[in-house]
Image (cartoon, one colour):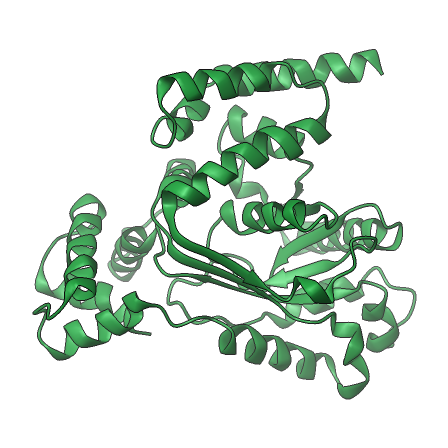
Length: 349
């Protein structure tokens, strides 16, 4: 026990002193507040306190500083004494699961372990952070044999946590974030979940996992201009994914503006499993639920109007989106009419 406390103290000290932590905190805390938070962090001796106290305080401030509105619905369908497998659309590398756990803390639901790809382990800081928050890391870009082994390990980890009522789990509906704003569930996700079951009967197999569909809406995607830059470079054969790109994506996702944010929790899938005849039926249901519960925001309407009016803003919302688009594009993309049109099309849907 003493060794475990020492290891955690070593981790929290490393995290509190790392430049990446200061880089995250500086835009949202003044120096006095930042030092107070880090002082509290340095006194942490267990993972539970790190997650429930430090992370909660950080996320509470992130919501205040990076969103104009934060709402959620459907938690009345969930039991605080049960564990769930949340499967959602994927908007942000770190924040999707982090905001889910903020909601879980408020509603006294069980903590949800995040399942993330090893491409996010960009440096020693992210490795320490994902370890202390109990993230389950899966291997990306491996051989077929390695991927099969990794899929089985993921499936077993998820089932073990749910069945033992230890932790809930969050996983995205697909590998990687959608770059177009259109959400589509990968069949391979459900097949991976099936791997660890004792039966091939998908209804019996999946019932054990207590799945909850979750639809996430961000009015603004902090990585929008990055996506356009990536798309353009891929078309020219110039894009190479690297750790620096993933690091920038994570940082922008954390501190960047998100506008109106909404989390819509469906009733547990077990309540309607008997209505499905195949895994494909479930995949289609996920797509229908997630996309029908993505909220239309003022930025969506403003984008449509700006495109129709040849980029001329007619009201405050349109002017704000236009200025936001120009700021984002100036940072990561060529600022011209072509890129502005593509940017607005992303938000117009």
